[in-house]
Length: 121
Length: 238
Image (cartoon, rainbow over all chains, first blue to last red; front, side, top):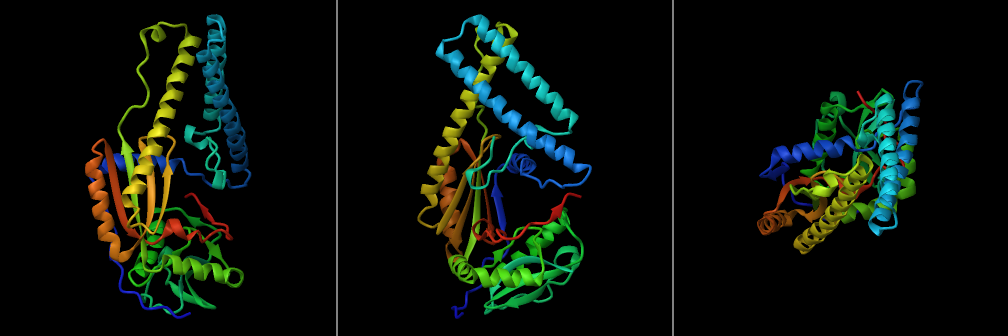
């Protein structure tokens, strides 16, 4: 391959911001939510499976919440039905929280990277 | 013995000498066909994710960037010589084209934060509601807030793209779904236009005092390389 020689590139990278602490905090949050590899070993496999199953449940739970809110806004639920639906979803959220604690998972762990499509949640 | 791969350059380039990489091991040049890979020997099965290792990986690539534009591999890429040879023979045209695309360019990144709270305040009737109804009302405010945030993030992404379009050879913009950070953008910039790019971003910042900006670079074109598609990335958490 024959290419013309390139002149030297700019040297050291620089970072410019008036709000460094804020960006450090937000970048930590983003880094924590990046997908980690699941190690298939005796100790890790149980947590890996729990993570996968709970992610799918969390996804469905959020869909149910959205659907309930849409129905509430649409006015086709009585006050009693709204209360009943709200209580059911509240209990589901509490139960999921309990399971996350049991398997040592944080909120940001419950997600799946679907490649070009993006992230599940 | 495996090879830890840092980046790929074409064979015509002069590279820095006496570079040390992951775990302080000497980095060497492995020539395959028209290409050179910067590699170091690695005996373990996984690469521990430590600050030192991440910085060592970045330092090797940044040293090369002073001489030429490399195609960086993702942190933790471990291969053997045969895999690299197969990789080059199967993808030499694509690699040549990718090198040509990034030649003379660097990556400049912009991240944008908004301090705004996207959730509306609850109405008096909501705070006095029964628990189930109050729960659904709060979810409603969360969902509406999330939709407003997503719309704003999309608008900011489009605005940023327009601001830097005249100097960016390529742009990758991502809107983030949660947190204060709305947008993260990578731009492929010809190195002689880096100062022009900085100037444009600075001007853009002055237009949007409601947003907080972080501008960084020049970096190797990490976001435009996509070099690890055929390799597993072996790293463990330590």
